[in-house]
Image (tube, rainbow, N blue to C red; front, side, top):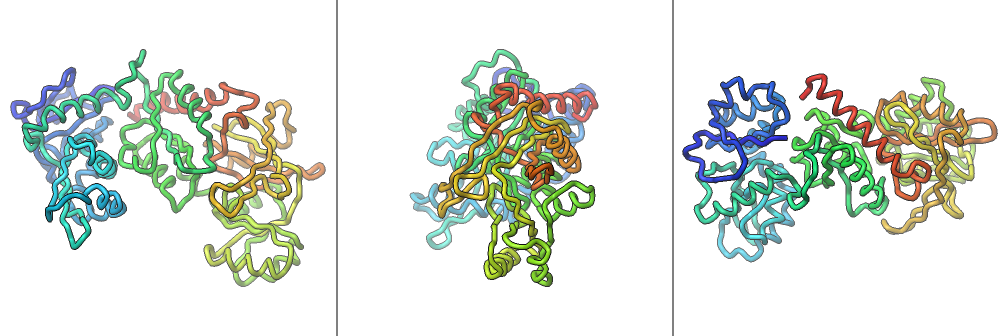
Length: 491
C-alpha cells in the first residue's frame, strides 16, 4: 500500500521525508490521477485546517469515497471539532492522565502528539492512547489542573507549521517510522498484499487461542502474503488501517469485542467473528428458539421468566441445567439438584436477564465439538469433562483458578457422520463465519448444546490432526474473501 501526503501548500511543508509523495490538496481533489482508480493508497491529510467544508475536510471525505484510506477519517475530524465529545471519548483515560502528569507543577499543560508519539518518552503511553482514540497525524492535547486532578480541556489537530523547529527532526523520524510500517526493523522480502489485525487480550486467563497458536496464525498469514499485527482494546481507532480483523478474544455483545466487530464491518473489513454472529451465538435464548424452529434436536428446553418458574421441574425434572443467555466457557451455567437451589439460582439469573434457559441434564463423558468455517467442517474434537465435574471446565474461586478436561482431536473421517452433519446444519443457520458446535451423543441420539461464535483454536489441542494446515486453512479463507472484495471493486 502506497503513502500519499496531502497538504494545503507544499511550499509551506517543513518536513523532508524520503520516498513520500507530497501533493497539494487542490490537486488531490481535482486531478483525475488521484481518483478512485488509484487503489491501495493511504492518504495522510496534513492540511492546515479541517474545519467543516474546508480543503482539509474534503480531502478526507473524498478519500473515503474513492476507496482510499484517509488519515484522519472524517468521523475523527468531526470528533475533534467538538471539545465536549473529545472529553467524552477520552473519559476512561483518567488513571493514565494522572500518572503521566503527576510531576507537572503548573496549572496548565500542552502535549504534542506526533504520529502517536511525543518527544519525551515519559509521555509516550498517554500519547499513544490518545492517538488510538482520536487517530490523526498531528495532535495537541490541552490539560487543566482542577484541584489535585488533571482534566482534558480539548484536543486539536495541528498543522505542520505548528510544529516547533526543535521538534521537526523528531517528527520526521516518527513519520518515517509510521510510513514504513508497524515493524520497520523487519526487512520483508515481499510487499504484503493485505493487512490483518488480530484482536486479543494478553491478560485473559482462558483466551480462545494460546500464545503458540497465535504465532501459528501469524506464520500462516505471512506465508500467504498478509501482514499481521496483534492489537488490543486500546487500538479501536486504528481499525481503518487494516483490511481484515480476526477476533481471538472472548466475545460478548455488551463489550468492546462487539464494538470492534461492528466498526470493522462498517469500515468494509473482512471480519471474523462478524457482528451478526456475535449477536446470535452469544444469546442462548435466541439459539434455543432457532433450533426448535428448524427441528434440530436439543435437550428438553424451557425459556424461564418470573411467571413460569413453577413449570421447570414438571417439564425437565431434577437435576437440570440453568443458563444465563450470554454464558460462555462454562461460566453462567449451573446445575441445580433441589427445588430450593433451583429457585435461588433462577432468581439470581433473572436479576441479569428477563429470560433464561433451563434444559434437561444429559450426563456424558464428553462433548463433541465440530468447528465450521465458511459453511464447511474444519475440525472435530472430543472435549472430556473436567475431573470430578459435570462440565469441561471447572472454575475455582479466582479468575486464574480453573481445571479443564482433556481435548482429543479427530479427523473429519473418524468423527460420526451424523454429528458432523448436525453441526453443519446448525452452524449454517447463523452464517458463514467460524463456529464451534457442541453436541452431546446419548445412546443413538445427538443433541446440539450450543453454537459458539468464538471457538477455541489452541496449539496442542484442536490442531492435533491438521497441525499447521489448520491455521493455513483459516488464513486462506481471509485471503479468498479479501481477493473477492478487491475483484468486486469494493476497494
